[in-house]
Length: 112
Image (cartoon, rainbow, N blue to C red):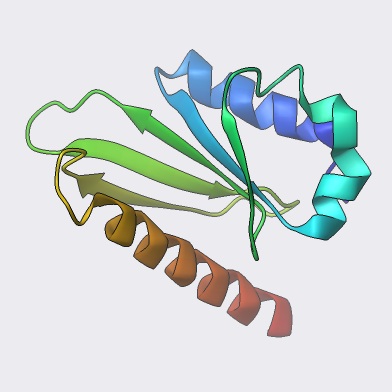
């Protein structure tokens, strides 16, 4: 099972490669398990109650939209990347769509 230290390691790897932690999505189960231990890694970052455990990262674009990557916070690494326009009225809908795809993909992996 993933714990706060594992989450901190994931965040550190992304930051090493130029990604910025933007949001953390936690299910009630993981939130209860990592509780205060995660605060040192997500200081100032929005933590959202969710149906999937994941972290959103972004990095400046080479061209086009900003690259946002959602990384599943689980023992098996899995991530999806989406280039989005952060100023679009559809921005939040685009992120929500990717979160749904991640949840569906993770669900398929668990059943396999």
